[in-house]
Image: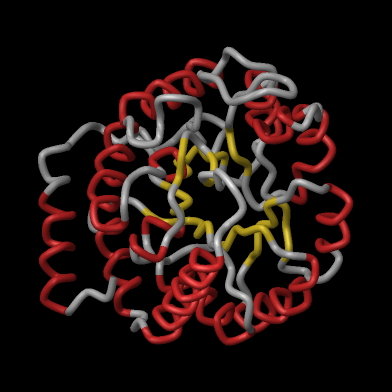
Length: 302
């Protein structure tokens, strides 16, 4: 949705106003751990409502940094629908009409990305900064052309992000690497295939990895062992608990070895942000569940 200047100013004013009543002591300094929020935890929020709620949750939880999800920035009608932590799977093969509608939506999103002024993202950044918060990473759904990817790097920088985190199709590795070199911005590679990710890391000095300990556990990988071996190559880390080979569960109830991972990060004083990624059943809009996840992490690291 393209917002007029007047509509956006009204929206931004509401975002700031909605946070003024929340004045907790902001305990930003977590001992030995750079803790933040992955706003995927609030993935069911649309673009129109996301910013004030994210700011509210971060302030109540005493978190300064966040990785903001693309659907909390890009127009709601051009973003995919989410369902309990995953993209909603199609019930059957798409019809020709559905495929045509999808192409039109993707074309509209590309047009929006190529035309939206950077002041739109700078105003979102300002809403966070006025509350003493910052967007440290932008979780993007990358486009398919050099021009569109270039604009997405500009979007990330305008948001104030120090990295852009995304899954990169192997065929697009060189294009993304060129954009990273041009903009001198770190790229956190989200991955499901470790060997592909390792090949991609070699493509640019700006490439790092952005592992998710829950997703690794679902894939029957030892998350602790992976983090211990690769922490120096991480741009960030997503904290999620899951059953080995199964689904996501509340923090501390799964097999992601979260307690040991957190203690390791604290011991090594790892500077890469560790983002709370709360995506088990019942989350997606629940601010209370996010606070429970943050409380669990703090109970471990002290």
